[in-house]
Length: 618
Image (cartoon, rainbow, N blue to C red; front, side, top):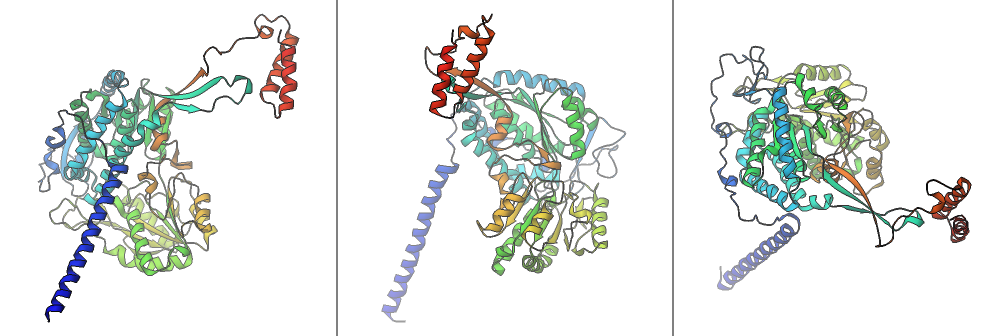
């Protein structure tokens, strides 16, 4: 190679490097600006925040933890309840069957003590400023970011899910909740100015709504997201000035204790009482006592419809308002117009698989039905029949484990799931893979169900309307967009949903308008939850909202306040209507004219009735 060629090559290399360096610098600048505008939170003031780095995590969250020996009176098979020790909850890892601990059951006396402590702490906390509350949230946000590995392992050890699933479904959404509340929470809870009266004669009045803490609120949360389901109501409750009692599921009480302890430690090192946040875990027989407690100002329930009936009946005895988030049978409608290329089909399959199999399908807004127009159906079948069988099961806490999907919380519903799948096959559905429980060769005591792909499902089959809450992907074919909407709306549930079509097309927007659900994502899966929109469903999926501005305000007394707009101008009672009235006939003419003038439709009507008003003023 000649010298000029060498120089030309060197120049080209330098040019490519310069271009790459320019791209790197530009990316860095853009990322910095976006972070400053949308993400960055102010630095913490000086304080004893070593908690962020020095918190002592349990040995069970270490990657090489070995099982401790089970107590002699522990159940032979993993189970939270042992008749010989009804005072204790037995905790096991669903992925491995390893014994974790025994936790005392909360008694009615424990509940009373927790509520009393919380009340006393809330009496002080409600007087704190938003800035003081923000410091607590910022400290916890930093703690959560710095200790993701250990926190995720605690969640995985108690729930059986994978670390990737926990990082997405537990940590990411909690960080977003913290960051959103820090950035927008105060704005949502500031006194809200309202338009005031439409009455022309009393426009001198102003109107506003102030949001004040309710007191002690209650959250009864489910087991499927042990970290996020605990922290989500805690963040909203303490930021809005309340104290909170959290009732966790006995299935995840082991991890819930640590997550609540982390918040309590954060409160303490920030100079506040850790009694503001309390954890209780009674058996179901004593849960009614908690829900009906007269010192509870509001309750949020996440769970099943049968349990919701009991919760609501108990809460009704003390007139406690309840926000209810129940199950779902979320549909993802795929329009033919969405799949313009094979690469897009693969990309869509990735979203659908994450929506169906994340956390082993134990997700209230997971995709339980995929409803496709004909061309989209055929294209997805080709991709999914290859990809679903490749999913690997196991515990991601094992060394060097290459795991896609973890365990279910327990095996209590395996018979029901196998029955639903068998019934669908009997009635014409095609089972591509899975459909039954799985005995893991390394973890025979783990609760595993094979990733399942069930095709050609019709609305008449029971599995099309029953919530599976499991790793079961159901494919249904629709004739057209109207038929897809009809199928999507054929169940009693209405929590979430999705539509995949061309952005802004008539068909896509038709689905958005006509799908009967409380939340819907367009060309994505469940992003309405990440966006901190008000979250809640309709029909058998419950009612009320948590999340976003509405969720914060639900935990407050909305106090309506009316004031005089101008100094020296206020309401006075005309003598004609002053008690005791001298002439009821004149009083009636005066009030009738006043109403007609106040809501006059024209200047002429106003003037006429004003004359009548003045004529009867004395």
